[in-house]
Image (cartoon, rainbow, N blue to C red; front, side, top):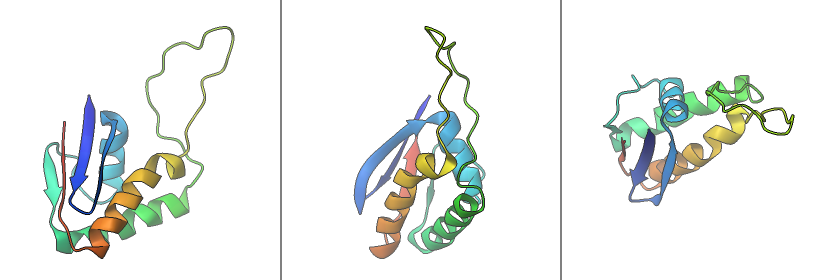
Amino acid sequence: MLITFKTKAYANITMFGDVAISLLKLMGHSGTVPSALMAEDVPGALARLKAAVEAHPEETLEMPQAPASDGEDGQRVSLAHRALPLIELLTAAAAEHENVIWDG
């Protein structure tokens, strides 16, 4: 499943569902899809997400991975890298006092 985050203040961002739900939970949200954040709630969610990333920037979000081919190890993507697009979207939404919605 893919989840797309939308706001009038920034380009749409699409993420794998399990990653998006993990990030939503780090923002203090239930992880429900579809759902939304009202403009007044965006700064708090952004602060919680940034705090989680700052506390564990190199941590990875576990995702089911296909077996590596040719003996290569599967690469892990850090929490900081996974969260960056969503942090940018939330920052833009907070600056322009816009709502954020997401759906699958």
